[in-house]
Image 1: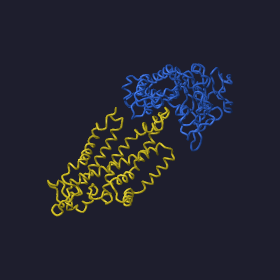
Image 2: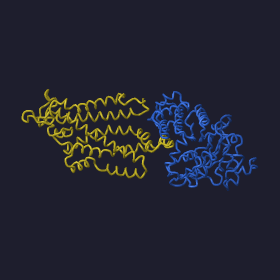
Image 3: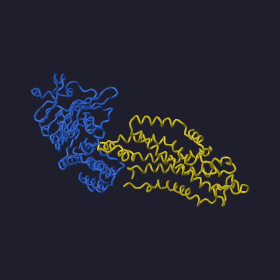
Image 4: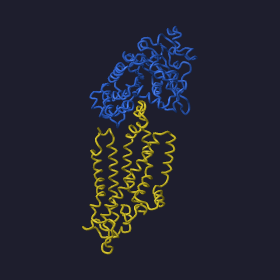
Length: 330
Length: 275
C-alpha cells in the first residue's frame, strides 16, 4: 500500500496534424490515492480530455503520439507500452470511466439493464441472472428509483439526470477502484449537476472509490474535491489541496478563474474574465505559456519558462511569482 | 421493451400481402387446379382466354396459367429469398470487417467491392451461368447471392464507420468490453435497420434479376415455371394472348412493391425514438 493507486509521471501527448505538431499534454505528473477525489480543471483545449483518455490507453494512435518517457503506473505497475490485453484488464475492472454526454454514451438500441449487465458479465463471468441482479443493485445504488423497471427501459425513455446515473452504474459495473468522470455534469442543468456531484462524493465514500473529476468548472469542484490540479496550455499550472487553492492560489491564471467564478455570485458591473484567449496547442507561447494573458508578466516570464515551484506543503505553481513574491505588490 | 415489428400497422399491411403470396406459393399443390408442367391436349386447348375452367387462360402448350403462376411463385420467391440471405450474410460480414477493421483491411475489401461493382451484374451472371453446365436452383441462388452483396457491404461499412465513432462505443471500450462483444452488441444492432431495409429491397431486386435471367433463357430452365420464363414465353403472344405475360408480370409488380413498402415501414418502425 506504499504506492499510490494511480501515478502519472511526465505524461506527454502530441497530435500530428498535416502541417504541425500539437502538444496537447506536456509533462503532466500527478498521483491519486485510494478514495481520493482529484479534480483536474482547465478550459477547452487545455488537454484535459486527452489526459483522461490516455489514462485508459484509448487515444487513437496515430494521430496521437504518447511520449516514450511517459509513465502511467496503476497500483505500482507501469501501463505505458502495455499490450491490448493488459489494458483491457484495467479498463472497467480497475478504472471506470463516465463520459461527457449521457445521451450519446448509452447505446440507443439496448435496454439500460443489458448495458449494465454486459459490463458485469465481461468482468466477472457470472451467469445472466446473477449479472442482472447485480445490475439492478448497481442502478439502485446510484439513486435510480424503481431499478427493476428502469433496467427494462431504453435510454430515450429516461431523463438526462437518470441517464447520467445509469451511465455511472455502467461505469461501476466492473467494480473499479478509480472512476474517471470527464465533464460529468456538462450536459445537465444546474440542480441536477449538484445532485450528480453529491452522488460521486457519496460513492467515493461508500465504496472507497477514487474519483478523477475532469471539468472546466472550478466553482463546481470547490465543495467536493480533495485536491485540485489546474491545467493551462497542456501543463499543470497549479496543484494544491482544494481548501488551499481557493484560499491562497498562487498562479495568476487560477486567480483569474476564481475571480470569474465569484463574479457570478456578486453581480458586479462587469463579468471578470481572464483576458485574451487560450493559445492553440500547435503554437504555445515561448517561455511561460501564460505570459501573454498575465497582468503580472515581466521580463523573466518572456525569457524563461518557470517549472512547478513549491509554494507550500503539497502546493505547487508554475509561476515566477512564487520565486519572486515581492513582484506581486506591483 | 420495444414492441415487436408486426404491431406496426404499415409493416403488418405489407407483410400481409407478402404472407398471402408466400402461402399461395407454399400451398401451390393444393391450390393449383391443374398440373403446371403436363401438356394435356395440344390440339384443343391452346392459348385459351380466361374462363371459369382456366381463370388465367392457358399457354401455347395448353397448360393452365394460374397453376403455373402458383408454382412459379414457389420458384421465384424461394430463389430470391435464399439468394438475399446469402447476399446479406456476405455483405454484412464484409461490411463489418471493412468498417471495424484496420484501414488496410478496409482498403483491400473496398477496392475489391469497387472492382466487383464495375462489372455489369447481368453480364457477370450471364457469363457465370453460361459457363456453369446445367445450372440448378442451388447454383442460381448462389450465383445471384454472391453477385448481390456488394452494395450491402458498402452500406454496412458506411454505417459501421459512423457508429464506431459514437460515444457509446468509446464507452464500451473504456469499460473493457472485447472487440467481439462491442461488434455484436453495440455495432451490429445499430446497423441492423439498414441491413433489413436493404434486404427487403434486395429481394425485390433479385426477383427481377432472376426473372430477367429466365427471360434470357439462362435462369430457371423449362418446363419448370418461374415468373421470368413465363413472361419470356408470353412475349410471342402479347397481341393474341396478353394474359400470358400479364399474369406473372402483375404478380411480380405486386410482390416487389409490397416488399418495398415493408422495407420503408421497417425503417420507420425500427427507429427507437419513434413511438
